[in-house]
Length: 544
Image 1: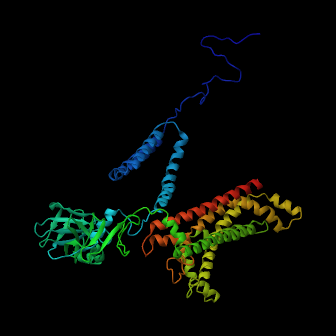
Image 2: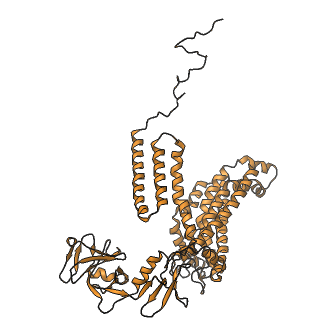
Image 3: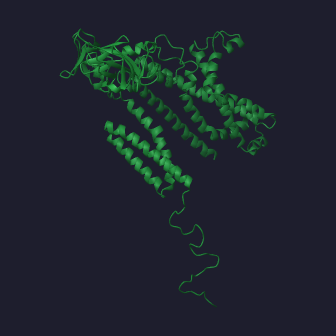
């Protein structure tokens, strides 16, 4: 018997095995793959964009003194550079971008909405108390004897028809030209303007001077523009003259109130509601943003003018979401079952025709259906010889929007049900037939449970979508019909359209109150989805 030779420079070998390091990819302790020139260029460009965005975002944070936000920006940027300039943490390179986008587009908007719900943010309550005082004083400016007058030229920094307006005013005594807007007056370099005899500015660097026709078209905006000054404010008197008036209402820091020099009335600051209030309860229109706690939420539940319409809308919202989801599922499923039958011929042609509603832009189809339900010249009344005022009555309007949703939504359910049916082995249904089960018994005992296991997550998602289906209501009925005593809440309004009308309605925006209702909607959908997913998991365990 002999043994393998061993010694310096030799290695003991075992048959069928190779020493470590003799095969590619074995025994390496570090990643030594080289980066391609294209990949390197992409990395440089993306990191350069990241640095540029960070620098761009840093200046507003510095100017506003938002040190926490600035710190988060610095840490995040440094972390991204550390992650993508190194060769470690490969999984994180793929997870971090998605996580950042999730935070930016999902988490932060939800947090901002939640924080807004606890404030009085809205029309008249957008800025700080100091901004409210300035707005009140400038809005009360009156021309008095001896007020300074200036030659006025209307200009803009953008499009003559839509751009922001500015005043170019010329002091008749010194010939000095100043530019004014809502932020105040600023002196203009004499070399940057051309002034005609009489003080009118004919050209100014960086500004577009409006001619008489363009200025006349925006006369309302010109009248409303107030330029704050040290002694009051500057307002227009026609299109060619401006005056520096005196504020009738002024802030008195001693009493923390606004005094009117003409009427003698006083409005005292109320920091709980963010407004100046007189002794008789009158509020000045301009207030400031403050935290109001749970008042927006309690208002939904306790104010009879809101709670009644709110809960009525909530019931209809559930009915609409369940009817839309259930109706489209039932219709789509039975069409899929009919075309799944082996005795059916020309199934491909039928499937193409049936998915046409799904291929059309939904917003365009909603407008078409709105015209089809028109009482006077609509196709439905004309074809069937009816005289129904579909959108004039509460129940016919609700039936109409559900029918529209049925037409728009069943092709999606048909497609997913077709895919789920093709995944069910035919042997299962054939076995029930052999056991003597009728087609209905086979469908109820085998096909439907297996379909629900596959489609339950999609049904939950469809319910959540229809619960907040803004387009379906706003593009067909706009929430109508409205009761005579409540023009802000219609019979077909969902909570989302009701919230939109509160936030952007003609009676003044109430962003804080609308955010509170949005949190109600979020909570309801989250609870329904959580319960439904739990039941879905139990169903999957039964049929697994």
